[in-house]
Figure: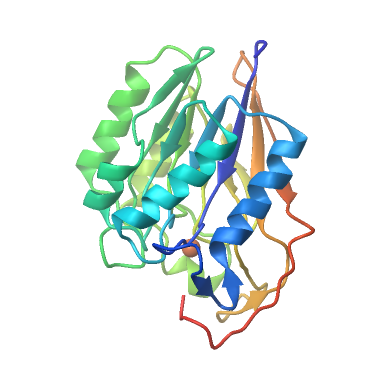
Length: 257
Ligand SMILES: [Fe+2]
């Protein structure tokens, strides 16, 4: 393991209760498998993160499908946070959501979702829980959520920006222990630094949203994932990878996102 921690983030897997579900023409189970094939060809992580929208149809079988597939590749610690397509109670029952302490780092999730709502929200108690998580830990912290707490510059996605996010961003930026906040939801790569805190979004393991800032669109960029290397002194190095060999054949009439 060495001194640094290798973290693999997968996000927005949008799985169905069975292996044959498709979304916009993509078999999301197979695209996740292609991502895991590619990622584990490159390296073996110390921690694996699933940052929400694990399910397109949130049933226990969907989450078991996710965990069983991931466990074919990885035996170490996993942390998942729910997204807008997930159902909180089922999610918490089926998937690991507890913080992870490893090599001096704490990796803590914050639940930004509200059942049956697309946009994110955090109330004072959730921010308080996070402050507690950070406060109890002397070393650097990586925070994981589903939604963006800051605007990303894409109008139709920025309406989903976390309600109550100012307090969350305040904690993330002002507490020197918080080194990065990693998230999903926007189905594209994003990297901005506020203060000394990195805000990083990762492409989905299925389809990506297009670059038109005004309206919903999708593009044929390959399914993605993110590697993070967390240094013992709090440094964060990161790189997005793609499952380039997965064939993207989009069908926009298939199941609405
Ligand atoms: Fe998503």
